[in-house]
Image (cartoon, rainbow, N blue to C red):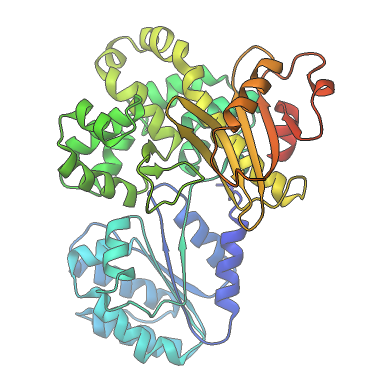
Length: 462
């Protein structure tokens, strides 16, 4: 399978591995995000032992781990009956050569024996620290990785030399895989998001509708029940989490709105929301001009395009999909899809702002988000803390070119944004799928930046 992108993460692993002394790296992230592919790419040309844990008995896991080590050194399989002896066996072999030891899906080992972090601590302190070797613990269960490896209560706390929280592909990175035109790439990304497995499932020699039928609406596809599987692997009772995610996906964004849609009281709801945030299913957003700790205008949104698509269209319509998927697609999904894609387009436009900043084509903004107050909302607001520079932008995923009306509306709404109101330097930006009306560019001064699909495609080409 082709290895895509991850240049930054791969470089981090290489740099850590090549630094003097031992390395203890913690790699984690949601399932399907490409952790194993990254590790195998990193290990490909280095001496290593790679062990993938599974949901098996502790004795079988121990046996397979020792087999992997023995195979590396062409040893006869030793009689080892506990984990401390297994790590001693690894240590004996580390004396022969510097090695990278990878334990993938470490949470499965912890599930079978909650003393594993203590055994690894002993290995790191007494053996690994005296070598130039590298240990990598990897896991998809974010809750277990955070509690058993990263938390203050873990025996391993403070011992890691580096950690990587692997995110899905950005739109720019996903375009290495998505071989559609820019507009169809946006539509496709709005369905798959950036999770590598999902992106690579689609066949980009066929049209988008065929991919949706074959890989999302088909009960044979792994994506059909994927979100439920992801939740069941992290929480014991996924029902309430499912209802919360469906409520958020269908437009209920404040705690009161979510509580009303789900019937869950606001008090208990806050715990569910916190868990979903920790698991990277949702994120809390505030106006970019406000403090995260002080703001009372927070909203929640699903932090993954595929999950947002699934909970918006699949979960509420499963009965119909199982009987008449074509009717559900043509009558429910397809007519509403532009509204769904428009949210993705806003996120992609924010990504384009960051890329424009990196290229030096805009001021050095260091915060990019959105702003809202009452009925007013501005899709993109970028700030340059320490200066008076502000960027205010609107995004339109419509079939009509954008004209002076939107520019005038943006100027008016900008007056309500309370940030350096005494004297700030404003830049305005319009992002439009369908381009701009004739003469608009000439009518605007140099405070304005216009982004059509051609410019966005250039900025976000891999």
